[in-house]
Image (cartoon, rainbow, N blue to C red):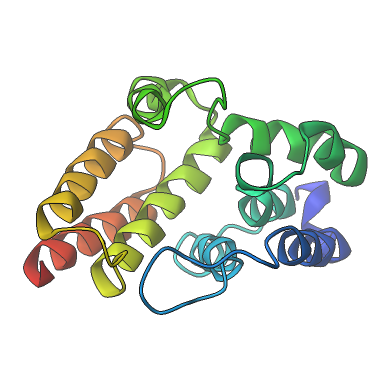
Length: 182
């Protein structure tokens, strides 16, 4: 048994931390959804579809956008949650020195080299993003841009194939549904 599995207080601290960090953020879609729902959806997918019980993975899923999208520093994550979770968060955080386009290319090229735990988070993240873009796309996104996102997400997840069959199947189903809807 992973020693982190019984550490539910860490999971709830991560949830509270993410909620506070993202308190003023909303998803880009037209439904005005609180941003924190996104990391909650990822952690939920990991637990329900993926059967993930590793608290470090679930906590990192909750925290995965805090460094990228808020004033949170990597050191804050390490101080509050330890090196194990901080390392996972860092592994799924885009390099802020890169442009958005460069970050997308980096995600494609670096996907295969991620740890198996980071791949779980990344696959669930892409699945949740595809679902959100299908169901509540950003108002300024054309159908073409949505289709481009689906193709890009497939390339990223393609570099992580063989990580977790159920999560990959959920991703494939989300993309197929997205293409039917768009």
